Image (cartoon, one colour):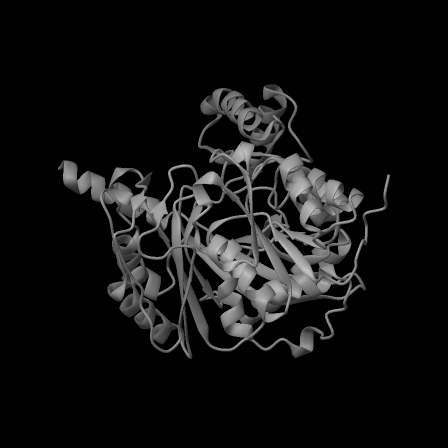
Length: 465
């Protein structure tokens, strides 16, 4: 087997194994760097923005993702046919698939991401949790690895106390998570989580942790090269989320002490070095009301919310990924990272919050995007395009920067008010986003991961009264 720990070479051409806004985002950076791009597109995306923008476009299959964007033989065959040096997986799809990274290496193609062995380690979140504890990171009380039986789950839960949370060891993107309030609910919750994990991820292993009812979700952006250097680029707050899916992200995270902020950065770097991490990634933490942080998970890919960090640091994280993947050292240390100002990202999805965030695909008959100082739009759509029912409902990411958090909130609200997205049957999250970022609890940084769901439940109770 080929040693895939550090397969590097100059990158002059890249196949973009993704779609939508992240595919276009990657293509734009590649054009600035003089790198030739090949965009792969399903038949549903042949007239997409990235298909029109990339240097070359390859049709890889029908709309169903498992027969196009997730179909490894087609992706590898296309990469070899077009003679690319590297494949950039973006986020989602195959971005955290160690088998894909291994197959790339065996075909002499650079995978823009961590080495396959590291991805294999990160793919088991229960095992990663143990590795981070051994590296000195604080972790919540819970199981040492996967919980094999209901009996074991009950014993561990009684030891650490309820409520607890069951998580799929192979999970990601907020899926495969089940909160268990009482001992009576644990056996059925365990069986349901195992079955769901097996169905979604093909792996029924689950682990167990104490559940924090009120916590902030804070993640640290990190970069690591193949020469032993790792740096933290600061943290982001991702607490405004519904059912573990993020809606709003901001940086820096409000309400943290400078001591905790520094600790989070040190934890991220220590954890990355402990597992030999290479590339861009995030170390995710929960912060309780008393300001204590505990490790949650590592995401071994570029994040949806990476532009927030770019706005504060001035770095192009896609360019940094490509440099590291080609074998270059970072060329700077922690003392050179100086984030400034405040940034907020709002995810604009074709969804109806009043109907449980049901997707609302359709043709965008009118699309007017905001502008002005400190406003950035990352989108894979233009007016006249169609939001497909086959994929994620993300239309765009609105990112703003300002010198202070208060100014950033005002700027984000102003930009959202200017945003016009219309089409037959299409609804968006824009009204909800405006309500969230102008809420007094958000302004005062009193929000937690339960804030959005609590607000929506209160709305339903008020309507029913």
